[in-house]
Image 1 (cartoon, rainbow over the protein chains, first blue to last red):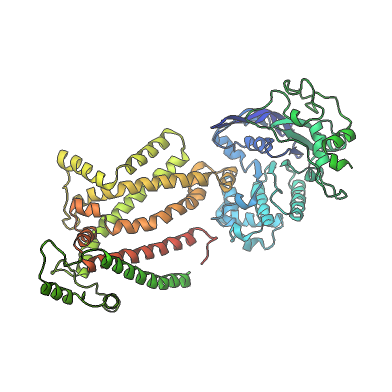
Image 2 (image 1 turned 45 degrees about the horizontal axis):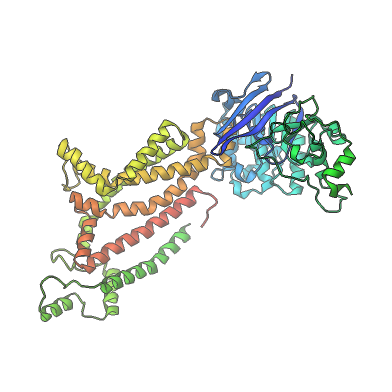
Length: 328
Length: 307
């Protein structure tokens, strides 16, 4: 049994302009101690998928389907149950470490309350443990740092604080929502390395939400590719990278900038879908070179690996059509 | 922070000086003067009066003498209107009155307005929110000059519980109506400001982090959201407090409380230059002081602000 199993999840936001379906029929799973990446561009619904697990959707959001945690359905669980999940069984870190920490509170207090909330420990003991955790995420001079405020930390250091906070209760799963997006490239690599080390150390599972295929390969065994709120393709990361079977995955991989490239960025032509007026069929249809009759109207079934009406494409030829600049 | 405060107080000196000069010029430039009245006085009498109050001096000399008196002797001069009272006497008599009902009114407005705004924000779009917003809007469309007569009609005329006016040394029954009449609309503004500021704070990333730690809503609000949400409210409270303790013209007039608001109106109507100047300087100095306090409170709440 997987540790976390998301089954046919749908998330809808009520907006003045009508309902917006951000996530539509997403299923994925994370094994105990395993790592799954959810990859997609902005607005693909990947973050909302992660937020639904912990009931952290914005007030106007509604989630349906099932989220099974160790077999227990926790989607829309009562607040009491969600509070023991949050921080204690499942840790989460967010995209922007600049705004995710409270600028009005000392870092030590913010860390300590994650512990005192879940365990019967004194503030002193909690702060000591927080100091040890700052050491573990390799923040130098941890003891003095506890007394500082978030604005006295750099972006990378703040993300380390967030990671320390998420790990204080030794959760079985860490959800990392775009953990490196707001950081410099060199800092990105450090944070990803840190996450990999901590995963090994604590035997913790990881659900990594990202738009950056570059960080997925080394970090996750399983990958789920999302577009327009739907899963396009999923499978072992190695297979997905070596032999993508969905036109969107092919395009995504072709669009990854290469160090030996000519400097031009390849992009999939077309615009992201309008989530307030979704196509009844496959959301990628308007940008897909393989689109044909059933695509815009009939929703392609998920066959375990891919949801696509077209036959498995020839990757090289398709990549050349999807991202012509990169293929040359 | 101490250095900063001292600097701010030093800057206040030229600001007050400019306030004095501009107010004096505006008073003198306005048509009419202390000696104009329905009866035309003989020129000799006018000359006498002007000499008595130094109004025959050149303008710069008048202002210079005035400032000198205020600075060296802390003397705001004699009232032009009331021979029995100096301006110092009027302030000594009237300011404690307005300070009493103004401060009480302020405490009431904050004590009710802030919790009301917080509850409305946390329970956004529930009946509690609608009730709080409805109450605020209702209170805001009833400014004190409408509130005062309504209160008197209800509590004095119909129920006969409370006196319609007078001060009586600040007896509780004399305080109730002025305090409520003055405070309601401020209470409503504070509630609305708190609510919108709280809503904004509750949408910020660090509130999501706090919830993701598994904290109950009550703790998230009190420990994480309240401080940042109060910042805009505090900016509003500084000048508001000064406005409330320096007397509401309407309250002093309507309830005959004898506060400086009443003196100020009488002075303006009768060209009592020295009284107007004295009260203007008092309000100016208090405004400067409380703006400084607001800024110091900011630095105390927000660790990113250092002076």
